[in-house]
Length: 251
Image (cartoon, rainbow, N blue to C red; front, side, top):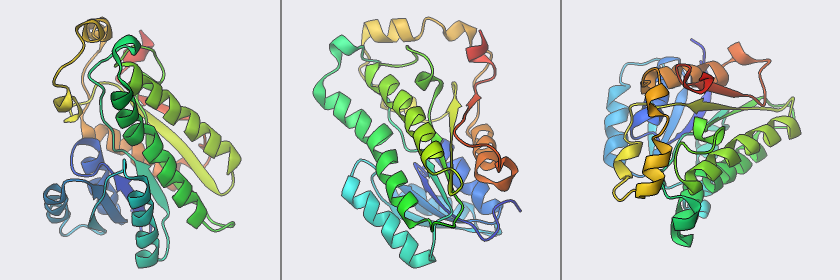
């Protein structure tokens, strides 16, 4: 088991990639604090992990609530005595709005979840890792953080920010914290369900390269990449962004 005796904190765990990551981590022996807004989904996740080597502990929380989510980190440290791994997976889309159509409200709401939340959690996580400790952060970015038009302006900016934050943490805390990101391509999850009134211009421009996508991925495939970065198998990897997109960005 790759994560035996490890304690992991995973956001966005009620569905999609976060759900798959939490299950895989528990299967690999970790105690997993699974965080999301939907408590009923988290309770089902706990049941799904019954009989695994590790356990899932459902914790309701909203990463957009900066004070509240930092308090969840503190409570988790008090309960388990430590946190070894942080996975920032919670994320939202932005209706494919280009900059000229993006409202202040949309900008703030997307960055609150996609960038400020990971920053708040990373700060709290770093500050509980001892000076001689070995903490690991894995941030879920996107190929939208590498290129300019896989979504709207807010989502694109937030994922570029996540990659920059990851690199900064990796270098600043090298030797104590390893921080890496995974940049998925198209993955079959619920994230697109929240897109109700997309910008016609934004949707048209963002979808222009869809025909070059070799295939869609599955949440479990991203979970495998996250497990690699969270485990000692990647002990010499720090500050990188692992692209998992079936070769889409190779075009």
